[in-house]
Image (cartoon, rainbow, N blue to C red; front, side, top):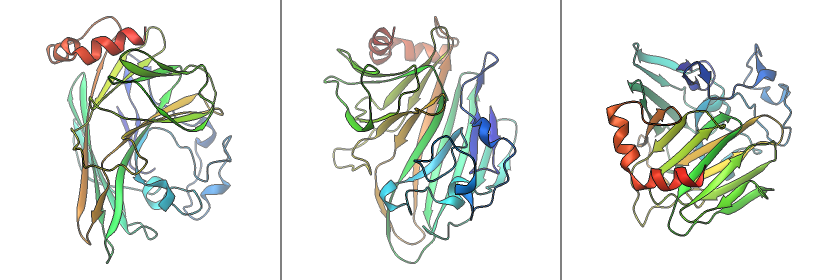
Length: 288
């Protein structure tokens, strides 16, 4: 696992069985970071007003609160301070964003060879209440498949063309990010789990998030989004916390647990519980 505090406190890569799983933008290798001139960086996706660095990071939802369609530069591209670290964890903190008046902390902890956690913390450093949600965005090397289980499978097209790539099965919706064709979809997440598979022989990754209540509201309508790029070989799994009105000094937290295992079977005792879960069995059959 590789962490990059200097570019938005990112989880830069996850390597499993000598394979890199997360996308890193080759066009930005060695690029100097000037937060006032981010749009001058090279990109194959000029439709987005921010650099596509790669990795996994914390964004602030809703995106309608962004300025000119761009993520908050201090939080997405700024240098995070490392507050504590050892060989199993790192805690990083951003500066206060001068635009949004938010600051972000990211705690990444390796629990075992097959499990890690991420805790996102968002604090209102301003003087007035602010509405916000935490938005975890993971940029994934393709080809990959992303699935969410549900009794009545359905999704909303946010933009782009999902024809032939997003499929409804009897127990799940599966986004087949197997070619560069831009689309974004929004999905419910009733089981609070998302399943990702890389290629035909690649590993499996399950992300589990806390259960939500019936009264919870999400910034983009649903708690999960999937984006597939038409310009670079990556897709995104995106998870949202419920929205909250944060008083000055108040903090919102969002916790994720990730399990990873090799194709063909679980690799440890803790993973056996995942294999016994009906969600996993049904969704895995949909993705075969």
